Structures are given as C-alpha cells and as structure tokens.
Image 1 (cartoon, rainbow over the protein chains, first blue to last red):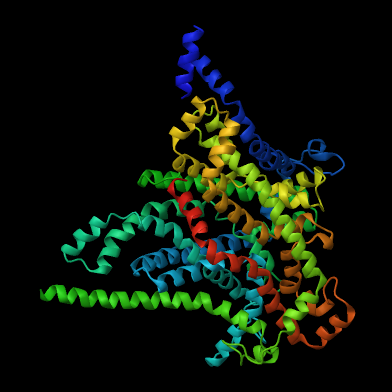
Image 2: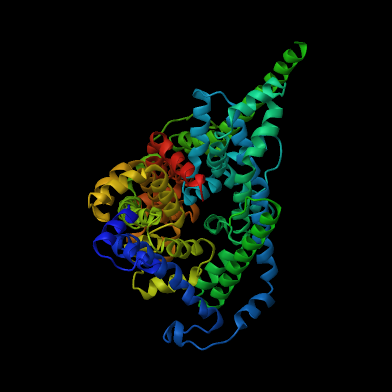
Length: 320
Length: 302
C-alpha cells in the first residue's frame, strides 16, 4: 500500500520518482517503526555492544580509577600468562570433554524420544507422558542443583540407598572428580530431554501421510517406516541444532557447574567460564579474566563458522 | 496374506517395545518429583534411612512450618515476584514493538537492525566487561541490575517476528493504512489484540526465565534484603547454610532447634524446593500448549 500511496502523491506532486526518493518516502511514512525498534536498538547497543567496547581491557592493565579507555596497554601479556599457566590445559580439557559428553548423550536422546512419542496413538497416556517429561524444563537451575545434592547425598540420598540396596558400594558422586561429568550430563538429560522433543515433533507432524500409506502398501513394517521416513525428515532440524550446539562447545551451562562445584571435585569441574567468574568477579583480576573470556568467545565463533562451512559444503541445511 | 500377518506381529512387538520405552522415560522423570513431594511431608528419619521411597511415611508438616517461619524466604518470594513482574513488563515492552517493526517488509533498515541483533547471538563482550558496564551505570545493588541487562532476548524477538509475519494478514495492515491509520494506532488497536497468543507465549517464556534466574542477582546484588528467591534457595540448598548458621533472618531458637536435628534441615530442603517450584508447576499444565506453541513458532524459520 506504500506503493499505492506513492502513486497517489506522485500524481498530485510531479516530483522525480528516483529510487532514493522512494526509499526516503518510506522512511518518513513509517517513522513510528523507528520508535518501535528504539528500545531494543538501545538495549543491544548498550548491553551487548557496550561490553564489546570493554573487551579492550583484555589487552590492557585495567585500573578502575583510570577507566577502560585510560588504562595502560600491555599487549597480549594476559593471553600469554593464561596459555602458559599450569591450569590452561585442565580448563580446556574439562570444558571440551563436558561439552562433547553432553552432546554425545544429550543430542540423540530427545530425537529417539520424539520418534517414540510419534509412534504412540494419541490418548491419555501420550498426553501424560509428554506433559510430565516436559515439566522439568521449568525447574530452576538452583533447585536442580539442590535436588542433585540431596538425591546423591552419601548418607541420606535416595540414589545412594538404591545402589546399596542393589548390593554395591555407592561412590560419593558429589565429591569424587570421576563422577562429576556424568552427574552433570545425566541430570541435564533428565531436565531437558522431554522439552527437546518438541521441535522434532513439530517436524514429524509435517510428514506427508501419503508416504506412510505408500510404504504400508509396499509392506514396510513400522520400524522400517520410522527408519526410512521419519528419521530422514528430522535431518534438517538435527543439522541446525547440531551446528548451534557446536557453536557453544566452550560455553557449557556454567550456572549449574558453578552450583555443583566444590573444592573436592574441582579438578574435573573447573571449566573456562567458572574460572572467568572466579578470577574476574571474585578475585577482581578484571583484565586477565576478560582475556580468557575473549579467548573463549573467539573459539566459539570460529567453531560455529567452520562447522557451518563444512555443513554447507555437504548439504543445504546450513545456518547461513 | 501370510506375510501381512507376520508384519503385524513384528509391528506389535515394535509397538510394545515403544510403549515400554516411553513408560520408562515417564517413570524416570516422574519418580524424583513424586519422591520430593513425599519426602517433604514425611518423617525425616524414615526419609534419611531410605525407608520412605515412594509414598509419604510418618506424615509431618514440620518442614513447611519451618519454611513459612523463615523470614528470608518470604522476603525472597516478595522480591522474586517484584522482579518477575517488572522484568517481564520490560521484556514485553522491548520485544513486541521491535519484533513488529522487524516483521514489516516496508521497514527501511530492517536488515541492518536484524543483523545488528543477530551478531549478539554469537559474540558478546563477556562476563567482566558486562559487569563493569552495569557498575559504571550505577545499577549495582538495585532491581534495575536484574531487570535491564536482560531486557530482551534475540531468540524471543525472532519468534515474535515470525508470528507477526505469518499470522497477521497483510491485507489488514494495508487496509488500515489506506484508511489513514498511523503505525502506532495500527499496532496498539489492531496488531496487539490479534496477537494474544504470542503475547502469552512471550510473557510465559520471559516470566519463567525471570522467576528462575539467579546468576545476575548473584553478581549484581550485595544486600541480602534484595535477594530473589533463587538466591535464598542457593543458600539453603547448595551452600547448606540453613542448618549450619540458621540462615539469614532466622531467630535463634529456630536455628538451634535445627542444629540439633540435621534431619529437619533435610526436611526443610524438600519443603523449600516444593514451595519455590509450586507456582510454576501449578500453572504449567494449563499453559503447556502456549509454551509448546512458542517453541514451534520458533522452529518454523530461525
């Protein structure tokens, strides 16, 4: 309708109808839309781009009284110190291994669960199973950590009792470094596998019923139809989610790790982001921890771009 | 014919396995929840020894009494309600108009704004620069430090934009504009009333997020009187301060009684988990379809 209006005014006032003029007219006509976007624009400008300006302190020695701009430059000293520190490889290993472990377990389970839900006939059981498995998504990370701590308590936890009832010695999950990653990954699966099915179920609901009918006539079993019709349907969704997951390999859900961390399991629970929190906000080494944080987000961005490129070469389901 | 019969047999086996699989998933998710509810009203001795493992035994409401006597839990509850209401209002105020503007094809600069917002999905300044910024703005130790730095999420803006693009007929907007309706009136009088589903979805997504968040409170708030519920819970559940020190705002007699009985501390934990999660779990079954709808709109086109 902008075009319609443009024609009307154009016939009244014969002005040069250049492309530039048309664009300008649309800007003026829709000036209120800029008002609409202003809060979000300023929000992102200040709270997302503002901190990006602050990144420069990674290359400086931040002195609060001198401010971000006035602090002296030190080049890449903080990065060198981090790479040479004895904890660098431990942090990197913990971060990567937790992420990959989480991906290996947490990625396929929602897919399998969605395929299973899809095979159920609609009814009370299906609805109940979905409602119940979605629910833990809404439990806060603090409550989740509290549940893990109480359930796994070496003296009173129900999991400990259960393992002892089976006749085994229960390990001390909360303080044994060997168990930290498993505890983290499986509690995450418990909490988010159900919710993760929604996006796959949406894709499955788009399968052409004609395909299934044709397959039934050809004598395909249910399993064969899942294998050859439903799973291929999910591949685009899987690819996109996989790329996004890869892009946050170094960004493990550190809120939960921070809550479950203790001095005894530190050797396997300390990841880059918890280290940034400790050295930056607890020990106030602002520049040093900004450098580590920058290292982390640069690696994330690189992994995302590289994985996306690889996917784009092999099929058409890439992010961009 | 014979082959068809054999196929059905195989399919039956497949279906049975499938039911067993879903049933197991159901039990695994439901059991801890049932256990916690039972544990919160059972005799803590029976819970601690493992005798209570499914249904409540030796029913007592001691845990809930302790929770409701605890002043810091009440303060936390009040703060959380305040932060959630104000925060969600701010979230909607920032998200919906921006998403609508971005949904308009005739909005000059929409690609620029979209690109600028999308970058933040993949790259950010990091923890320390964000903290320094909030500090610089003088928001430390105030509600605004909780509300403003998380005023919008790019993901939710994209979901709302997709909704506006796909669910509001273009002809309606065109007709309104030909009638001389301004964009502001169009948005308030026509678009918003037609967008109740997405407003509900957004309010729920943001609301739950605000209710459950603890990290910004942890780094930006120092004054215990301003702590939201999640931070109080962290003290009780994770740092286990309640049994050791009686927790903030607890009177001495209650604290010493708790010290005498470590079991009661455990009981309180179960009760406090239920009390903190109850509001969300109570509304969830009624609003489930809105939540699901939100995820589905988002998955249409990212």
